[in-house]
Length: 542
Image (cartoon, rainbow, N blue to C red):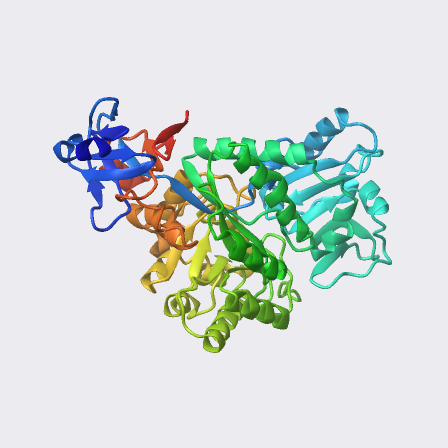
């Protein structure tokens, strides 16, 4: 009977299995039972567990890696965006206008035209204006967010509807961009968006549920089996959205067996006590699909919107040092309280001054609340003053970074910070690893595409579009380092490393089969595509 109980459901053999587990870095076979890994090793050792009813998968030498973990997404936003105006990659003003014109043609009068993903750096840097689209949108309010989510463009109908005029004052932590005469141009940054967002009709429950299913299916196509979801929470947005999505969408999907990827959820830090109570009541694992992660707040804005917080001013705006989105005292008090209640804390910080500010807050919280395994996170960790990378390692801080942002920001960072600053302080992945920081990779989807293989290749090569050479080549990573950042380190970064992140006996059998059968080629070029994605040992894509 004993041997029967160890019969595998699935045996994968004749593969190059990269495990992300230092105790056995590679194997050529693995056995899976009840959704978990039973055994890894050479073919004969694993074959012992095959029996009647065992499915066998001969991969002909293909590479297998653990299911990718995307450490930073906005999952429902990404799904909702799939049905809206898509402005990613638009590199001409007339193309921008044409896309809006197309949407208006199919829209009912008075209905909102929503979407975004635009990046003004692609057409030379000029920021869009309401006047670009006012003539073609006389009866529809329009709101189009910039790719980084920290700025958006409203047309004049939307400005009027939300009562924004030359008399409206800038709110704390945000800016209404104006002409020299003081008239709003249509652009709103960071918390200024809260003047307009309440006027946009809420997405219906069915739209949000559909968004989850669409986004999850696309994630599986890209080899992503787990995401860390920071929800529909941005400066200026309601903290309630994350909680509504938890009950209306995630709990519904879990109860009706519609979850197909695993999610680790972070909630707005101002609601920390609510999350603390929920974890006390239900534990961190709601199911094998849904994990309660922790809380998040914002220190600054973004580089693309000139609102990331720096010690020195922007080269192209000499009086602008960026924006501190939340006051230091509030950040400090909320972090102290969240940490005391045992919650994991993540902070958005992009500029060098913002990163130092958060590192300081984290240091003071540890000295007050005492030492424990807390895995404080900084989301984005994009630009560092001298010595900051070393502090991540010394203080044991997780750097949750997005390699694909490097492709968008290489040119704009040079323009906005000057060559010298940009070269010294941007996307210092290798310096972080050298300091023993935990490096976790993500996409920030829908700000950038969800594409772990693209992230890995970018971290290895660091060659932006239209460049011939690497940007800061000393910061390039090896394939091994980049894979770990999307697997075991990403799992550790959200306390899921007991179950996920590596192909190790006892862990959940989430894995990806790649198109390549040459590890050496993969290690040299970082090029491969996703052939199949398995979740709990069952094929989930294609």
